[in-house]
Length: 342
Ligand SMILES: [Zn+2]
Image (cartoon, rainbow, N blue to C red):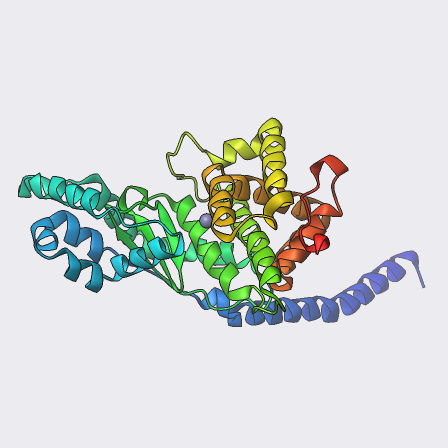
């Protein structure tokens, strides 16, 4: 056999060997694709609803004529009412009526030019495009048995919250309607809620502790998902005073907030229910500790243990999120563990 013949024979052999393995990998890819396309999360649909903001801005006199009927019948406002109950924040009804009055004072021909209404209508027109981008992105931060996270996003105005998630719905304040980064944050909450473990605490103290770390993980991961998605979803809330991403990028701010949060955790079990709730709201939400520190914890887990481990902490529960993080950092960066104090 000449050398050339050997080379020819070898390359035939190679082709012979390669064909089945390449078709196998094609098959595998196809299988993976099919499995993925069956994943309930990827089948989710996001629907937008601007009926509430349209009603308020275009027909404020009707809303003002009977506020009780509006609060009781408007889909977005039904959820706003629930939000006020959830965060124990009384509805500032007199202030709300003043806001309605200012919409009423607008000449009818100017109402269509309202920037909040325009923002809501803009994203409504881009609904299909947003679905195609946002659904795979959110699902990539949820466990493998990712559930359907179909959601209706309501746009409204004259509310205290910039946006919140509730059940299968999200309510967004009109001025934030086109803030795609905020929509991503709220959509993640929807997925998180569906994947987190069902309550298994044996005592009410366990349940209080779990809830604290649940809120830290939920807000922290949602902030991390928004931060990692800044390139694709660049429009953020223009809340310059408390910009979570800026705080998160600043080591000193992270350290200061971590210390503040740990101080609160250390005394949490000695506080009365109301005092604990108020202090958690102050430190976790107003001062942004849950958002910034939870985001930092997510980053450390993601970078050191990988996306799968981070994502699995959602279904394993908030304690696994805490323990995964604490196993990776120096003493001075530990998050105080209330579970270990009982
Ligand atoms: Zn949030």
